[in-house]
Image (cartoon, rainbow, N blue to C red; front, side, top):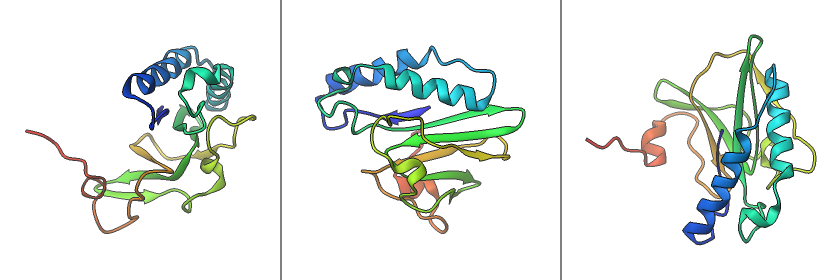
Length: 150
């Protein structure tokens, strides 16, 4: 899981909101990828919105990944794009602002899943307020401003 919440709040408020979600999600359970993701959404839905900053969680951007013997599944909200890193390139999994991931905040009902038979890898969710990475050409690290420090 990776995400952001309360991004426009004071740092302490944002930290508390993120920590509330992190601690709650430690209770995720399931025997397969679908159960795991349903459990994660149910836990998110149970959190009191007043604990998620001044936007009450409407600014939540989250990407969940779950694996089982059949493959993997991705689910998310507040995302404008989801990428899989292949070598030094970011490959878009869906068109920009695809409704599967674009719903803002914590959905009333668990959103759909993107199921893949691909093996584990590195996936990036671009929050709706963030920059979109180019699908080809410029490497993901350069495009995102990522730098490895000595």
